[in-house]
Length: 415
Image (cartoon, rainbow, N blue to C red; front, side):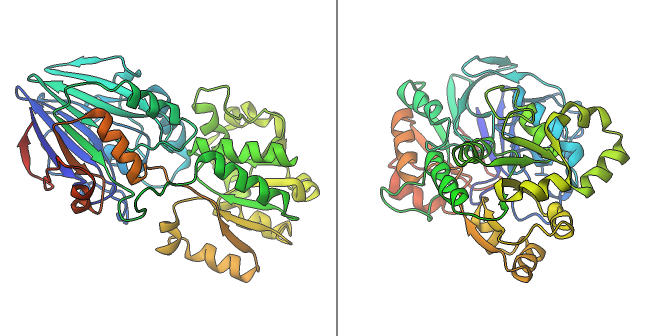
């Protein structure tokens, strides 16, 4: 079995790995780099077969529905099967019409089911459902030529699905030859430090909501389902109503999980901002809107109950909030990776908050394992070799693990 990390040996995001056996190939993740200014085919790795005319390329295997792991699917032929979780596929399919740029709808392919192997050409692929901020996320064991490669994907142990990672650690596959191990958090935490758990985040939201007298604006990803659950639970504890838009409603529905908050639940309201109303009209999404309109409110009702509401905020809400004069005593909660704020990804939003004297606070935790948990993970799997991926600091691996081998982007090597 041959491996090539085409992108990811020294950067976070844009992950792409090629696996080769008996003249057949798999691509594991095909992500858009985090620093990409746009989603275009110039970011595609130099791999043959993306036009769909090379039968040696059997499939593209996607670990989870984050843009830095699937985004470049927009530029490959739909003839190439895409293997991923059924819930992740549904989320991406439902989200695509709402989102700007080249947001791909995954091509048809086999659906992953945790611990159920898939036989594909010379490869045996065993997925393991795992804890991550991306919904329906998997690690993979790929077997061929009597060798075992384990691809960690992105994972953590402090989310709402931590038991999934703990289950893998308690019952790991044996005889792992190579572990491709993500290291997103290296350089961010030291020693035995850990990130706050999603339960800790829920408590911070609860305290914040209880002490906010105006409308609370929580800026987070509607696809971070763990976070939406934390926000909703905090709303219930403080008697607040969670206000979502149609995009949020369809993402929650797309999980296929009736235990996750839905648009027709008590203490949830649907508000359609004006720009989304135009989008609905232009695309004739009237049946979609009707399906989620049971708890719909309009601007007059939002004005009436705003002090008892938490809005799942996106910048497209700004014109509506200004027109309705809903900014008195409002609080803005940034619940995304702080790096986005530090690199000034929201310059207009910054100005708007400043001009309206709206306080900004941050409530967030990482979607990735702490260094201490990376050590636990590696000790459980006992690989013969650990290869860094999805990290800016591959050189730090040798401080944590004994059996590290660095491989550069574009280098083909044998397992």
